[in-house]
Image 1 (cartoon, rainbow, N blue to C red):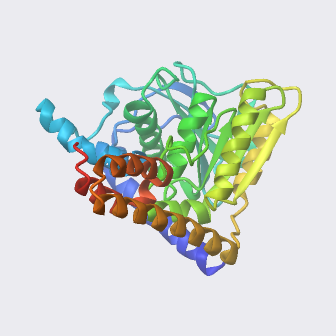
Image 2 (image 1 turned 45 degrees about the vertical axis):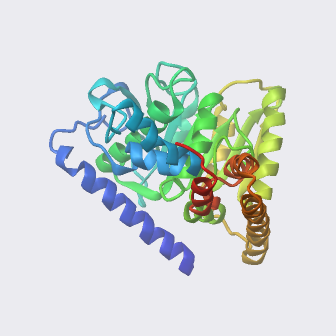
Image 3 (image 1 turned 30 degrees about the vertical axis):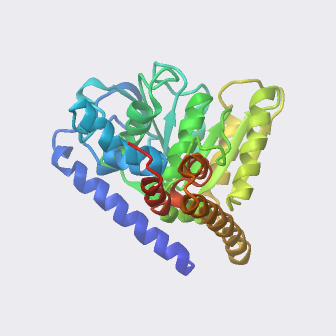
Amino acid sequence: MSFSRRIRARQGRLLAIGLGLVAAFALAHAASPPAGALRDDVVFNAYTPLSSNAELARRLLSPLTAARIPAILARSGKALAPQPIDLTRERFTVYAPAHAPAGGYGLLVFVPPWEVGGLPQGWAPVLDRDGVIFVSAAASGNAASPFSRRAPLALLAVANIMARYPVNPERVYVAGLSGGSRVAMRLALGYPDLFAGALLNAGSDPIDEGDPPLPPANLFARFQASTRLVYVTGARDFAVLDKDGASQQSMREGCVFNVDDEVTPLVGHEAAGSGALARALDALARPPRPDPKRLAACRAGIEKDLAAEFARVEALLADGKAAEARKLLIKIDRRFGGLAAPRSVELAAKAGMAG
């Protein structure tokens, strides 16, 4: 095993330990669904700091948006709740293969477009083949808030499954269908220390348009180097194929090169079939092998562009053009997100951008 793989394995084990410690108090009373069975009424009861409102804001919102939250709360007289989800009200679908692989189960947390949780048709035999647990939250469809429901529900699902089953932290993936796939991309970007890869089924976004925003620089660096993305879309799903093309181009420009693309013949806007799922899981299992020189050169280009944008903001402020500086900072926030912090937040304060 290479040095980088050993480091990642160690980090993954530490993360798994942390998730387990958060959940340990509840294990004595937690009933896990029996292996080899599908249940759609599973109740979880353990929380993780990764799903807290503060951590969601840090990882999933742009820096200027996150910086406005304290002022908004102050005006409303409210405080930020520790967690956005009350697990006593939530139900999850869980499918666990009958036998765990020697190295531990894989885990696929699925963000659905529909309100009722469920396992897509034909997926169970593939999950059995690869030893992958499936988990999905109910009431987490396209009508639900990505920030206050869909993302934290997925994170809580991962924490609880990892506490109840022997899961290999290097085989934890996030997936989604249609609008759920776009949330899965957001989670993969913001939580590359949790998710080794993402299966983007019939839904994606560019990462250079501000939604989703880029996460803090250290997290995006890990995403670039170690997260594998697999796009799976039907050949007849023309609108999504166009979006996939734009998304993949933005990934290349953002120095994200661990990308696979599966276009399924004769398929429209629907969940991946068993064959496409099997190929996607095979792709996700392949360890990323980034070219260090290519990655370094690409990152240097981004840093050069960002420095040039900051120089423009500072020149505008020096000339007393605060309004123009604020407009430019908003553009920087959308394009560079967490890569621009904390400098973008500091300049926003100088430019008089109120919360």
